[in-house]
Length: 269
Image (tube, rainbow, N blue to C red; front, side, top):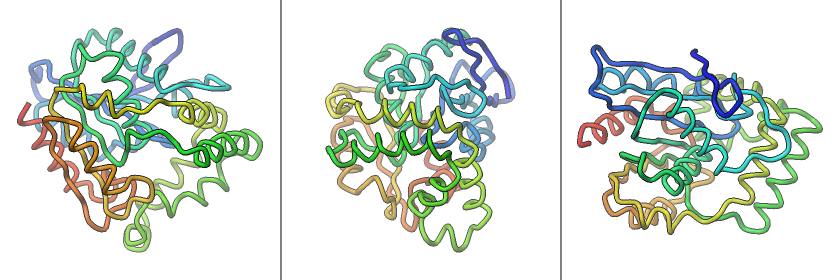
């Protein structure tokens, strides 16, 4: 892990570089909630082997990056990423994100379009929450601050992974559970509150002209086929990969297939 000062805080990140300089090609991977940069471990060597520099940071309030209590918006996360690129002297990047990370990638596309070379959206969606879902997010934020992550993580694990993954890949299930339980409760709560008030990103995707890759599993408890098709339609230059037997974490449940799709997409850039 490396660390740099970004927006007055110390941000932790993992990085892999190809042999040689890589021609200035960089992929920025944004984790979801309540995860951290370690969720991208299977992708770093594959992307570097394909000739790309890849950076996977811990978002504000997760992993090795300190907590900002209360509320952190997706726009703030996106601006933190832009500040990280400034610190690392990186101009334009492909931004990829999963779940909340995908929505942060959409916010980045909206706020920093001149820095966007491509977009990877995994297990995410552009719509806003219903009133019921928003209320649940806010309630969960209060619960996390009151009770911590342990019980919550155990409850949501079956929604994060497909049943077949939990049954047949216990090491993956154990890794995801540990990662969620290790998330700082106040950081996760702040992100939930900010995410509850996000705007719709469909107009952003409609205005996005860079190439895009969409990856969704058919057993995802949060992202539907309709969501995947909507993003595919909105993004004029996009590829859609629909994975069978996969839940909300395709990069961990089917890492070889995910990496193949990712590397093929990067190759056409």
